[in-house]
Amino acid sequence: MKLSTQAKLYQIFRIAIAMCFIGHGAFGIITKQVWCNYFAVFGIGREMAYKLMPFVGTFDIIMGILILVYPMRVIPAWLVFWGLFTALLRPLSHEPFAEFLERAGNYGVPFAMLLLVGFGSNFKDMFAHLKSDFRVEQNVYRKVETCLRVTVFLLLLGHGWLNLINKQGLLAQYSSIGITNAAQAANIIGAFEILAAFIVLIKPVRSILIPLLIWKIVSEMFYPAYAYWEWIERGGSYAAILALWLLTNPDLYKKPNRTK
Image (cartoon, rainbow, N blue to C red; front, side, top):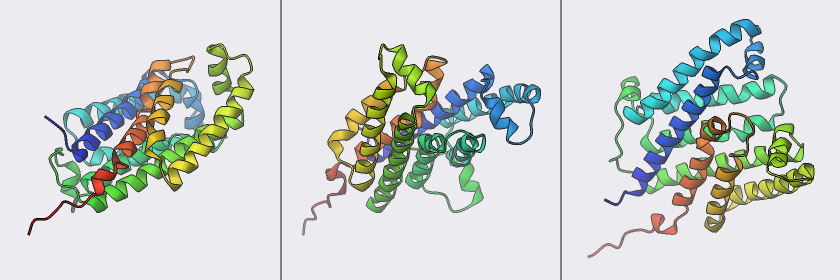
């Protein structure tokens, strides 16, 4: 059975949201050391941070599973807030502001899903079971497309920026795959990603989106530690590019022929 465009977008967004929650939640279960810096923003010490991490991680994983088995508007709505909040903790804990931008998939994709399915007319609608068989007008597609263009722009800009400032984690990735001059590679990749970011924002060329998607999927596999969970957590980045590719199909906006 051939899926409609809205059904494809709906499923892509659900899977991406699940990946964001589950990947992030796994780090809470693992008790990732760098999280101590984020708890410290609120004056929480290391000992207490390590005790709280599994609770945060468990809740994230439950949300990730729930969006797959019983999707509700409240789940992407929560991720918009949670994604923004956790991304902002990076610069608040003295990491580069680019870290906030690079995680745009975590908050941009759930917002795109809310645009697609609608925000609901009352509080009860936030907890209503969502289904993929809903009607979408062309103006809604335009709004979702704009949201995704900004999202992809931010995540590419952020990652490119991190390359240009030679983030040590990225240099370690490039060295791990045999690149001898990691800093030079980072500068080239950073310039490429920032150029691609502005192309997507100004006028997304459909032919470059799939290569960008492949690049993003492959490049996120290079993390030397917790590689699988790092890759999974960035599900929103892949979904944003893939969904944007679907929405840049010119046939989607053609008006149907009307017979007299």
